[in-house]
Length: 415
Image (cartoon, rainbow, N blue to C red):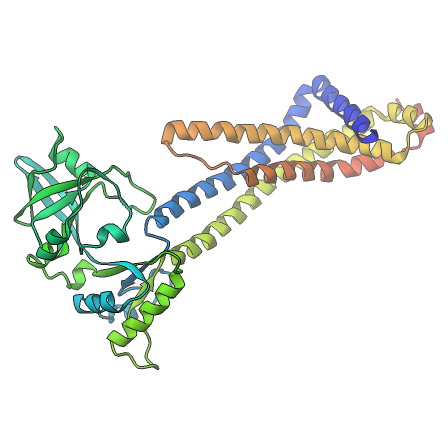
């Protein structure tokens, strides 16, 4: 009951301070508002960017292993010269992996033929992304079809002249729709469109089927050398359900070393890449961003804290006579201290709430202008409220303590 009584009186005093000294109080609260806004806005922006990047990474598959020449990563210590000397994974190794693997649910051999020109009658597209993949591509990648179907096993095995095209490709080549069944010209060959990928839009890593043209690997094999380094041959392995990516990776490492006849003392001459590599790098980078954001917001909050402390000292000075009367009527020191301390906390909470509301309003503005969903996590809201309370305690403790130690006789005599 005492706490609620103190809270009520402190709220009345705080409200009275706001009402009587609007400009002074609001200017001081502005520092707390800006500080809380900065901290929450930066944390939310970092979290939003992190989530969008993670969604892009998740498209690659959490239980998929990419057998490639180069290891994912980079930086000053990246031994590119070492990886450059490695052989690419080839079709012979791919066939042996398919026969020997016990943990793989699906396995596909894929290449990127870079940008080519695609034609349909008088319509032409420059710079289309041409990919070729073996029959299990639909099992190692997640995608949806807007129209048509995926390749049949017979089409994949025989290298039939068929293709799947992205949403943007279909829209530009066939503005009137109905792309399925039409024949387009790719690499001087005519191929029939059997399916159209559903629209995805560009993600943070640039992964999208919208501008892709997918061909059966065996069809591409009849046109180009699909094992050439220029096409970046990759074997993608998706593990069975219930089997961890680490177990799949361990088996693949043993198989690849056996297939390439590597001795126990020899290093791997291949890379087994998985999405956890990217996720760990994202954690490190965005951990630094979070720290920088907290430091920047911390300085703003610190300035606001000085403003609140100034208000509390002024408030103690203005109410010295009232404090003397309260103490002469029996008010204890802790009563006076808590009265001013709670008032300081309430003032900071007001500034913090204004900052949180500003961030919340900003999420709608960003969504409307840039069509990006901002993540305003409950964790960040708790951080904002906790920071406001902490600043209120730190800013108010000294003025509150000095008020509680006033001599009642001297306080009553003051003007």
